[in-house]
Every structure is written in structure tokens, then in C-alpha cells.
Length: 373
Image 1: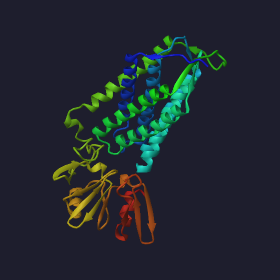
Image 2: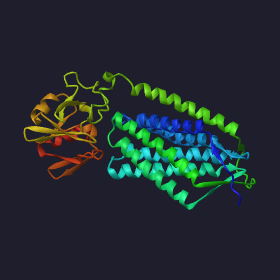
Image 3: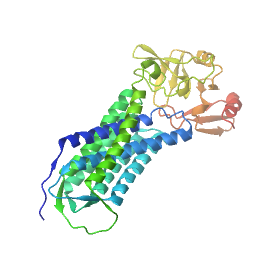
Image 4: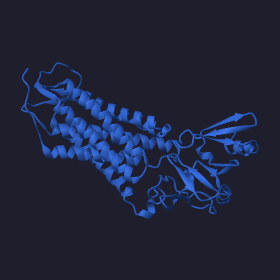
């Protein structure tokens, strides 16, 4: 079999990387701050992020393929090309559902990265299967390296983006995602050979490079627009972002604007010799520890100088309720309740540092009332 020589247009290679980075930033930005949004808004945001990330994988691939220069004319099967885009969106959507509707444990982060890695590889090889008048011949080494590289880079990107939900992690996750998509494509291309082939199937109409370019340009334009819109929010003044991210601390994703006026807007905590502040809305529970307390968020366990009595006094009028002599809980974050004879347990399934908190017998009735039981 005689293989064809090929080259790449370097401008389109650079453009493909830019598309992957914009898609990563847009998708990850759309899923920032979802914890305390309503279920419907979370679903919509995750769906939009899946379209941005999955569509970005597809756009990056075909921008790069537009830059592939072969000595023969070749086309793409329209149906297979469409399937490749939908597969990428659906698989990435599954990963995002896992990240935003399940407890974010190390196993969850790794599994989500594996799913995204599978989506990148699936999109690439399904997209390549749509080639007409030319066929790709793969080497075993190229297949193995592209699959392993996709999984490793995608897992790394998810850990970077979701290890902590800060602006720094979002940018690192964007870089990780963009490089994962970009590297997998070109590693797979390096492990492929191209040969001229007759049309042997009749799946759908054929798309030429001109028609494909129009589709890719339109998709990239939408991604660019979404990138600019999310970028405006990301680059907002520090005051506007104060309610979203605390310096060197956990994400405070929901402003406390709707809390009672007498309630402090922020809870102080100590970190690295500094006093920082956290929105009460993202705290699931406060536990007494001697004369001080520990604050529990979804991702962090933080030291607070307030005693449990002071915390209860400062948060009087808020949704926080005393569940035990050592615990204040925020019912909004309770996911399960278990009755144990004359006491009980409340569970925080999505809080990694805190799984459950006790409910004493004397507090059982008000806790059950706060939970709507």
C-alpha cells in the first residue's frame, strides 16, 4: 500500500489550539458557582458547558483537519461528522453531570477525567472514519499513545480545574483541557498514515473542505462569543468577585445578599497567619473545637476564632440551627437524615471533609422541622 505524504498549515494548527483553549475556558467558566443554584439552573449550565467543551473538541479537530494538506482531494461524510460532534458533547456531558451532581471525591474526579479522555479519543477516531476518497491507517503504537495520553491529560485537567474552584485552578484546568485535546489530535495524526481510497459506502452526503470550513468557522465564532462573555465576568473588578473567590481560600460561590440584614456577610477564618472571610451560605456545618470552631465547606476544613456560642450568636436569624452541643448545621446542605432511637444523624454527601453530624435528642424536633420532616 502506498501512503500519501502530508504537511500542515501552521496558522491553522495554532488556530486549533486557540479554539481548544477558548472552549475549555468557556465550559469550565459556565460551571463555576453552581453549588447553590437551583436544580434547573444547574442542569442548564451543565448542558451549555457540555456543548462548549464537546463542541470545542469537535471544532479543534476539524480546524486542524482543514490545515492537513494532502496531495489528493478528499471529503467528509456528513452523517459521521455530525455523529462525532454529538458523541463528544454527550460524553463530556456525562462527565460534567458526575462532577456537579455527585460528591466530588478523588475517585469522582479521576472517573470524570477518564470519561472526558474517552470522549476526546472517540470524537477523533469517529471524525477520522468520516474521511472519503482517503482513509487513515493507524499504527498500534499511535493508538496506544493517543488513548493513554488522552486519559492522563484529561484526568490532570479535571484535577486542576476541580481540585479547588478558584480562578487560578480554572485557568490551569483550561490549559490542561486545551492541551489534552490538541496533543491527542496531533499524536494520533503522527501515528497515522493516509492512503487514497475509493468511496465504498453510502452513509450520507459528502462535505468538501469549503463547506466544512463554513461549519467550523460558525462553530468557532459561537465559541469565541461565549469566550468573550465569560471572560468579561472572569475579569470583573475584584470587588465584584469578592463574593466568589477568597484569596488563597475556598470558593465562596453564593453571595449572602438574600440573608437577613443582621447576619454578618462573612465568617472570619484563619489561614497562613492571615484572617480571611467566607460567605455563610457555603458553610455546611460549624463544629466546636475547644474555645474555637471549625468551618466545613464542600472542599475545605477551616479554623475560625469564634467559639460555638459566638458563632450561634453571630448567625442568629440565619438558616443555621444548633443540632448538637458541638455542631451548628446549615439545613440547605443536608442531603440525608437518619433517625437513631432518641437521636439522629444528618449527612452531607457532597462535603468531602465532613460526611455526617450528630443530632442530639433535645435538638431532634427543631432539626426535623428545619428539614421539613
